[in-house]
Image (cartoon, rainbow, N blue to C red; front, side, top):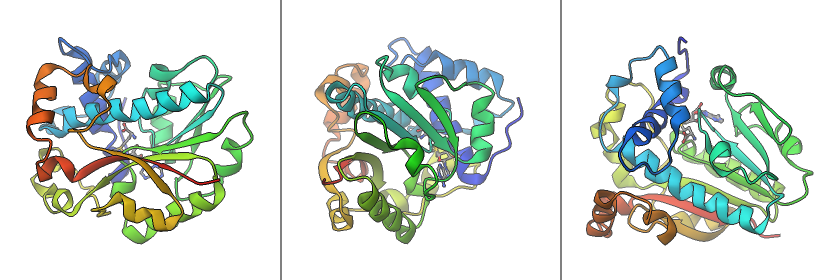
Length: 267
Ligand SMILES: C[S@@+](CC[C@H](N)C(=O)[O-])C[C@H]1O[C@@H](n2cnc3c(N)ncnc32)[C@H](O)[C@@H]1O
């Protein structure tokens, strides 16, 4: 299957490869066999991706998974919206048999996604931009609250666009949790040294050194984690080498610059 994707869309192949490599490891964190199948099926030179960001995307996914698990434990009939889902298999990992789940991404990504995944009664794929508003009514109106999740997407957009969309979500989704990652100036300054970006065009643009500064947009920060501060139940499942790395470099600026945040939108 040929891969024709826009610049930011192409970055979805990085976490996909990360999850496939993890699935083939002796101690897999996510056990994402579907990622292996997808990497095999895509006509794309995955050897261009190397470096720690591959495994970083798996650690990241495991932390975000736990945010969603915690939400579903409290709201089993709630709605989850994964904005910029790429070829993620999070629904398959976390489905509790009751959640209503929407995966949204740009039309070219979704066209690719639809060749491997199908909608069913509680799961739907939506074409669109997270900056748009046409998905808002579609995801609303379920039994429980709506959890908004956007993993490794907002980072690629300019500060004013990100702040504007967070402000609009804050006004439109009172009572919703919102999870997304932020990168500080150290991470952004050094991205050209990140080997996964060697042969792709996309670059991250949004610098956020302090996630609590986003509270002025109408969000309340509940948790801000990094790889040195994963949930205990999550870190326990990581292979020893990652746990050792996470605790040895807990205070290192290259670890604390990248944060995985969970906000609440006040009622
Ligand atoms: C680094 S990938 C992350 C994919 C997925 N969240 C994951 O972690 O596997 C970035 C994703 O953002 C998506 N994307 C780019 N622009 C977008 C937009 N305006 N709205 C929604 N998704 C977008 C891309 O198609 C791609 O799937």
